[in-house]
Amino acid sequence: MTPAELFLRSDAALRDVIDRLDPADFSAPVPKEWSQLESPTLLDIIGRHAYDEAWIPDVIAGRSAADGDPFAEGDLLSGDDPIAAYDALNDNATAAVNRGDVADTFRFTYGDYPAAEGFAHLATYRAFQAWSIAKHFGVPFHLSPELVDGFNEHVVPHADEWRQWGVFPPAIDPPADADDETRLLCTLGFWMP
Image: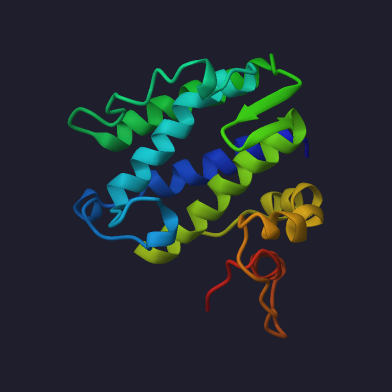
């Protein structure tokens, strides 16, 4: 699996979870560590993902917020259906990646990275937010075997380095009967029984 494919599968996994959320939960609190907001809600988290989706075409083209942030002031989830608004941004991001016109360097607010590593960063955020949101709100969800393999290939080799940056919590010893998904989640510090 290429890093771009890992991103696309992770992005699709997050969309799958978001599409199955109950709008009645939008005002529900979520763990503070999911956001820089003081008291984040589920809708705040979906809004953050909408913002990230809006940026994908620009990020993969090599642009950054330093070039101007057209999404900073707007409400990307405005209208009667925030999930549909998110889905439209997800469609645009998917189309941009599928076109394949990708810059050599992705310029994130936290630094510049080669495209392959940049796709791994983007995939990591999405896949493990999908898992965390699903777990928190009781949405049935598993990382696909293909995603598990992709993360083992493109992310696990960097886990200790990225953990030092605060990307991952401490690793967890997996249960004796752990499957591949559980072992991955333990390696990256996300597993919860």
